[in-house]
Image 1 (cartoon, rainbow, N blue to C red):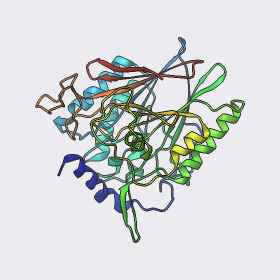
Image 2: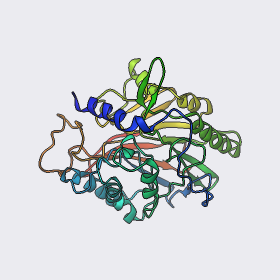
Image 3: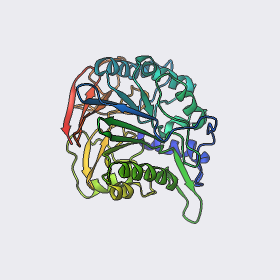
Image 4: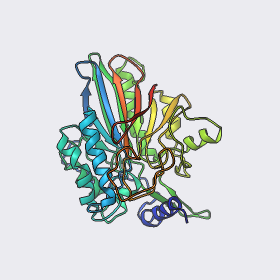
Length: 357
């Protein structure tokens, strides 16, 4: 069995049993903390710029030398880029003890003084601790801007982050929890990755409509960050749409179920890009339906499959070698300008795929 197939099946075996079709929120909701509707409102730098750094799929195992490059990649990128905000789009850990794994790979973020947030991945609740416990442990680290789970909203890591200029909110970053796996019983039993649920979409719509209303009826340009891609990405590929840049090294692995989030993005007209991880051999930018599907760059080490690179990466004993696979994706925004710039930065400093979108 191929490694990717094994991982997909493992996700169903470990996560599906706890993922029910019921539409409910996280069981841990800190009602003593009146969570604001916006996790954090940021502002542009004095030079009018703002940079977001995305890590994804670090798949960290504490004490495992195969994880060393992931840790070095995170440290090196933070020190070199000095972003204004970091977003990790999930699959933070890949082993036990999982809370210690999360704390160690996220420690450079916590010690950097740079604000950061996470959108949990499917593997982040597969190694002993509940999703709620994992999210709570992450939120306790310094610098994390994620808020307490929202009562009645499916999953844990659903958050809204804004970026304001002199005239008010200019950008919105939506973080969705795409969860793990789901089993739907019935005549045709469905086992698949989870999907964005109706109450998550309602939560997004409420924010989007409010921002549009406050912006004199004009949608505020936004990006959506989560782990598992939407089915429409595969639809685009099936229609022959080609990436603008980057590597398409494996089929996308979305849910078999479509919750309708893409249609809502199109209807409301604010989300310009859907930014995900999950598929380690993909790091491309693909236009479809008046927005962009963007993969982050695999940020992990050798604890899991990865084949990015000129000839395909072959793991070696040197788990800290720069310029091989690991990296991150950057997004830069300018005050008063509707578009954005994105690129991939490899561990070691090489920059690829610079695009103005």
